[in-house]
Amino acid sequence: MVRNPKGMRDILPPETLKWRRLEILLSKVALLYGYGEIRTPILEFSDLFRKGLGDQSDVALKEMYEFVDKNDDVLALRPEGTAPVARAFIQHHLYDSPMVKLFYDGPMFRRERPQAGRYRQFHQFGVECFGIEEPFVDVEILLLVKRIFSLLGSPLTLHINSLGCNECRPRYMDALRRFIADRIPEDEELDRFMKNPLKLFDSKNPEHSIVKSEAPKITSFLCDDCKEHYETLMDFASKLNLDLVEDNELARGFDYYTRTVFEGYVGDDSLAVIGGGRYDHLVAYYGGPDIPGIGFAIGLERLLTTLDEIPKVDSEPTKTYFLATTGNDMVMAAFTLAELLRSNNIGVIMDLRQGKLQKQLKLADKMEIENVLIMGEEEYKNNTVTVRNMKTGEQMVIPQEAVING
Image: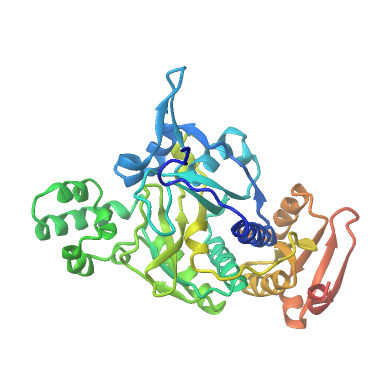
């Protein structure tokens, strides 16, 4: 009798209706935040993942599906989505734009042990944003995540940490290696931890739980820039009612992460359904320009095990605005207005690098967005917003409520 391979499965009606509704909801939220869809090949050169994820990652060591084709090229079925998107970003010179926001949805492959909600062919929805080093984009990404789970009616607990940068993380890694060497006897695991001491925090060995809790914390080793980045993120998150759990043991599994990392849990905090963070040097590592990036991925099979119903939503925003500000002190007001607009099915794109107003307007024009909302001190004081038509140059001041109500 014919059958599918181990760890692969067919998705049949009526379950496929839940999948369709979930994918529409996810793409709708991405569009509200100004992300465009990208579709990359299922097959990539194996080195793309080995370089980006790290040779000592579980994926590279034992989980990738690799083979040699007739041209003697070593290819791999993609085990995750960030590396292919970064490759496409470089190959197609998308970096010619100062800010690029992309989302994807599709199958990934890892040769793991199948279990509930985990298969060897699985599906991820993810977003990637390139070009912004300011912590405001970290906040926007987390707001996007919050909106997804709010629409799903699913309570989510978000854990967050900072892994520092290339300047401060090596000092922490050295301190962590010394600590581990004193606390863990020599065995295969110790050798693995010496190569990448952050692997300690991924260990499921109950004997390591005390070691992990007593290990030095990376937040004590952050350089001034990383500390300011993290503190600004946490301050804005608090003001925007983003509940985040600071988790010093959160490290994530891939080498490309820098600074912000986060994971989201549903239920009793034991089921991680989303993970992501910054990868500020991945593009340069692949041979592109040194452009920062941040993103996340949601495991759809795992998420669906937590959901009874998927709400039906319209597939696209009714309209999309570019929201510009006159300075960093207006960012909080802009975030507040943007979230209100998105709650009313109106898409909003912001240049979170927060340069001069003319620079933001130039980006809006390049992105061919016809109507720009401008938030300045006068607008903020009077609960108004300036609406500028980029084609005609005409602009007028109207109440924020008028924009929110369409």
